[in-house]
Amino acid sequence: MQPKNNIRIGTRNSALALRQANHIGQLLEAAGMSYELVAISTIGDKILDRSLAKIGAKGVFTEELETMLRSGDIDIAQHSAKDLPSTLATDLPLLAFTEREAAHDVVLSTNPAIRLGQTASLRIGTSSTRRRAFLAHHFPQHTAVEMRGNLQTRLEKLKNGDCDAMLLAFAGVHRMDMEAYIVEHLPLDTYVPAVGQGSVAIQCSTTLAPEIQALVREACNHADSERCIRAERSLLAQLDGGCSVPVYGHAKLVDGEIQLQAGVLSLSGDIQIESSATGNEPIAIGTQVANELIKQGAQTLLKEIRVQLASQS
Image 1 (cartoon, rainbow, N blue to C red):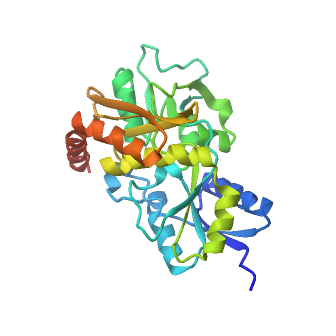
Image 2 (image 1 turned 90 degrees about the vertical axis):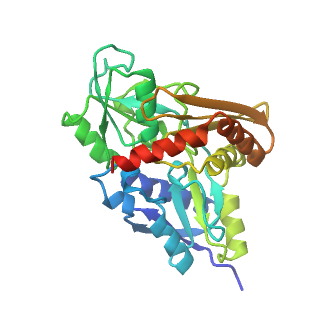
């Protein structure tokens, strides 16, 4: 019996998610498989009048797709790796990570003269507590404005004057051909991105046929990106972080070794705990950096942050 080679890809139904899903499909096609998309709207897509932190649930962009993996309605699910919860159910592992694009953040504006370093106060749109914290840390003269919705919606809000500029991940801006609005590229080592930023993660159920898992992984996984993101996710799991708290972490390969920089910022930006390490084994490196952050008080700070976020709900 020949293995099934038409892969049903579960995805959010935003334009960016669909582009990412079609990219996965093209990788599968290049390896001799066919694909179809199964697009849905997740809780994170439906609730747009509250910040991600105020929604309060883990997996706001993944839960429905995970249910479909378990039911067999889809074979794989694609996610922006930065949107994944810190831990996943053991029956729903991550099968592959696509080659990571540039992982840094960028500033978008309709005014090409805008720079974050200017002294005049700006209204900066973002839905990320990490970006808000970095903004408060480096540029307290600016005001963060809540900005939820897909990239096209956010761009329209920018054009309509809801904010003066926006902070976004370069990868998504690039994938959606919005680079013309970039006015500033933020350095990775100063504005460290979210764990997984720049890569697309592929998730499956352990019930998916092993031969199909192997085919998908062979077609889509980028080994160097996987090593780095596994280290970042190991860090995140140890801290029990996620996309709703200002934990950050970025790993890169330097002479074949994983170099991981990570930290936690208070919501006000006045407390920053950082650590870094270099090594070969992703899980060990992530654990080492997390333990160092914990020694410096990261879990106490994160507990305080969660209390603050809950009080804002």
